[in-house]
Image (tube, helix red, strand yellow):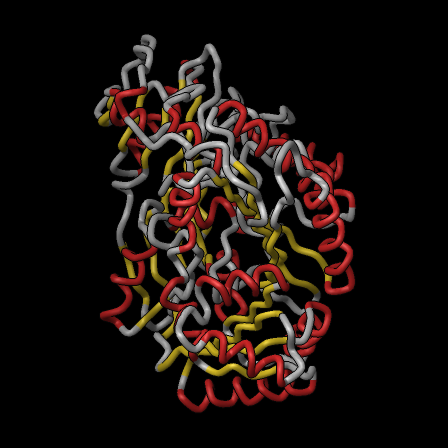
Length: 514
């Protein structure tokens, strides 16, 4: 009802639509398995951004890798990169293929492209239980990490929404944040050491608790997105599995009071592992399709009205640890929520959220089947600028109606809080044209509006999705001229031929339409 009727359902996936051109002549890759069949190339052709899904469903790929390599160790990876550098073959590292920023996408170019699948560099390699350090191959997926640690009573605690498919190397390369980062920290906080391979050599960063020996190379490689080298393994800080994990909810009277409840909780050092606030539109969606979808929903709404809350904004509080620690954390949460005049809803909504926490991305295909498209983007800002960022983005997208559209529904939640600020995560919807080029063009226009709005108020280019190809034109505004030159200089030193993922981080070209 908000968007208006769709033009038509968007086409479904049909592999027979693809006619990939034969790959060009490629160099010999030695003893590394390299495949050039259409199936492998197609499966590694795009990530998981909305235009990736649109292109794959419509059978209209602008480009695909010419070959896919499967190295089994660092020696084979080093050999691949040396050969690619000498031959001018572009290299795209591939972990779980979950990039939503164009980070794994080949682009049309006369030079050949080799995608390097790191799936065989996976698994738990070593475990130092006394120090709480676990070494994993870069291709290890999220579920594999937790399965390896669980029998030892340990956890990494890193649960991004892409947890089921994404990998250790991808987390480190894109500066990932998990849903419980308030308690466990971002991936950069969890990386104690790592190994990376570049065309000019290998980088070994030992696992040390701290060091004053110059700049922190771990921090420099975290977020490098394959442009400075291919991460082959990481030493990660693991902790004992919590005795219990609980999520409960409250309803703030409005977004402003909800923000203040969150800020005060964080500044007071509350022992929570997760803190999340939805704005009014996102709360409305949650109440309608997920949070309280039952025969009791009208009763819940009536009870809230009696408490003076007509719509409200959903607050989710998560805590883990011993039963006593969790109880103490929720005492703090209830106290600050009560002081902010929020209505406590209890554990029911939290159970629903935990059940569905990794399911939401899969709804995108169902919406496309009905003729609607949805995408997300995120940023971060100091507490003092949250309202300004929120207003700028809403102003940019709510005025982007075209043709018979009635509005562009826009949802937002705050998550991943810090002492000085928080991440803002936006979701928007639009009527999806059945023509893939028109659909991607519509998305690209909305995406440009959003990124321009974020940049205009000095917020982060990205909080945890990364730069990739699609955010690259905006990233230098955050780094500054000198910072951009520094990153370019390091890339030139490690990859003088410029073959490592050349279209991420440093490529100023606007490639949203591709």
